[in-house]
Amino acid sequence: MGEIHGFCDDRFEPFGVLFGANQENGVDEGASLAVTYRGEFVVDLWAGTTDYGHEKAWAKDTMVFVFSTSKVMVNIVTLMVYDRGLLDLRAPIAEYWPEFAQHGKGTITALDVLVHRSGLPGFGQQIGWEEAHDWDHMIGLLERAELWYEPGAVTHYHPMNYGYILGELVRRVSGKTFADFFGEEVAGPLGADFHFGLSAPDDQARVAQLWPPDEDTLPDETEDPTMTEFEQGMWVSPSRMAAVIPSAGGIGNGRSIARIGAMMAMGGELDGRRYLSPETVDEAGREHSFEDDRMMGMCRYGLGFGLDSEFFPGPTPTAMHWGGYGGSLATMDTATGISVGFAPNRLLVEGGLTAHDRLTTMIRTIGDVSRSIG
Image (cartoon, rainbow, N blue to C red):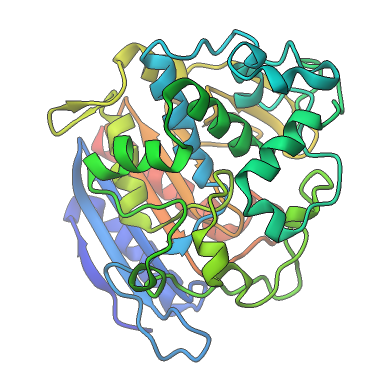
């Protein structure tokens, strides 16, 4: 077992035990895990290696792609412009972005996108990775895209276009690009080392390589070929790290995910700065949809976040959560004041997107510790 670095408060020892066991058993190649309680870090652990040669140790400031855990950041930014009165979640997107209304999309709302029932879960055509790096091109594709379903009629997870739609809405109503808004209004003030569009060479050098599943490829994400291939090293090319892909291209670590989640777990305020009103945080954690998602199965959604259900369990009945392909995870709970961030570089998908033992054990541990803390 590689050396484990960081600290773990005695009250949260099960996290340390789990993290150590995953290292010892070879479940994790390299990973970081962090937990906050009432806004303060109580767990901050990292271990393993970051390169295919097993020569470079995972450091305190190592980062990794976290795939759809990035959607947590998209949710928060969307909620912030909503909270400021810049965006009505229930108004047609076309009120803010007229070009989006083409081909019957004029009634789709931001709420429809947040609960994955817009009727437009994908782009409807083949898209190359280089295209996905070009924001204006992707926005043009969305404007010209045709509906797959009647808006509001079918729940179907939006793997890639989710972030482009909501990110463009943020730009339209705030005057800032999604990446700038997130950096200036969320990551910067929180001191969270989480990024969209990482271009500085020194920062890119901190990003860990990814170990793809042994006998799997990236899933067929609603027939959008932007997520159907996985080549070793593909995700850590300089151009990929520099691209802004909000739904799946966030780069961070357990510490930064937990830090951002702490703001939500503390009702929208952290270290004397208010990011969201308590009312908006409460609304985000209330059920807005509980339907059979054609990609994910039965899902209970708040405002973009997953909520606990027997079909898609969260760590507690009051937690908001979402994860990323291969095992990254963010959870935040206003009832317990606990937030958790987990970011591995060995991607495991056995049993489906949400069913791998590493992830289910992590969720169960969060729940057990939450109940013990009271």
